[in-house]
Image (cartoon, rainbow, N blue to C red; front, top):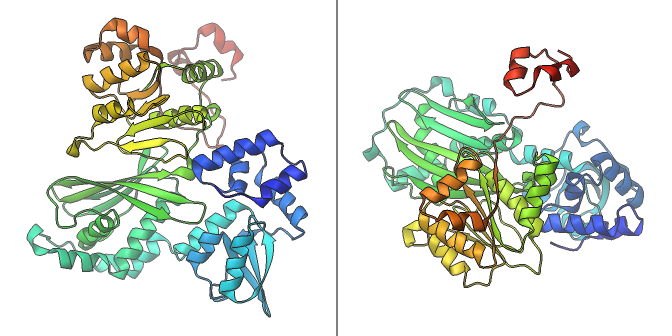
Length: 485
């Protein structure tokens, strides 16, 4: 994390205090976000307040970037350079180019933009969210998926029979590099980020190819690309994820790293699965800028939050987070790790795979294919002088036994486990072969969680709830009098 002049100015003008600034710097270390984005994420400032302060202190006006039409021919500056420096040229007058920026105190970025443009630089202040959105639009050339589909003449394409022997490595690679394929794949990735999707599914069937996004826990069908593009699209994704494009019989796993701007990088965890009509691709979006590591914002009741915080701040013992796949267990553990992350503490994690990287934490990818499984990683951790150990998932007796041993010998162990509720966690550990007295001695806390859908703050409407539904939810008849039905 680089030093920021804006932080010094905020402190000098007493817009924030030292404690708030230190908290923001700690969050920046974890997420890699800019200071302006971090201050708004931590609710220290609203975007409008921050824009007003920067505009006043720097002496330049603030503008609404949504109302500005960006002229791509204004300068010689590429979109990649704009994204790197978080600045967009919005006006040119003679030898002076006006840049829309969120942080004008980033002198190095301003100097680079001036050098590349070959002009003097003036600035106007904009909201960072609008700046990032506009940069993403410029990077995606502003086209919608429907427009790209229309360009490719999807309606005129017919289903073709693609036998495995028809393509060799050279033809697959060249097909995947064709402009329409590259454009479509890139736009699917960008569109999924804009829609706030958690997963992308590309699914081949007998006569159709379907793309679905999981948004707020529900799969939505987005488009049906032409079946003729199936192999080229999947090969393109395989190349980006550094997978073997000629191997189409066994599952493969990889990762795509997409840099959208200087402040925003999104990882896609790619899983390829051979199915009856071709390879299905599922990509999990890992957007570190949206990662919520503040325990108070994860949805815990206050009493439960206090218990959780107390347990993760104990010097030793085990904390188990349980729930089904996709219920946010890893995020809860990351928030716990962020709570205890300190220069005086050695933290080691074993994950399959590492989803988000954090400054100050030693993270290890387990790889059973080469013998680097959870037990092997944990045995190695115990020789690394750890204070806190995070286990991605307890799956078997060996992992559970080493975790229990570590918890009983002066280490704090954080782990996930697949059970339906908190009480059955103890039974599951005992069924794995762990003695009940060891479980009772080592485990400090067990929490079970589900991912709940939130009501949209903009389109929510009051509605009548059936009395029977309220009773089924656990309310008592005498409590219903206090509700307006």
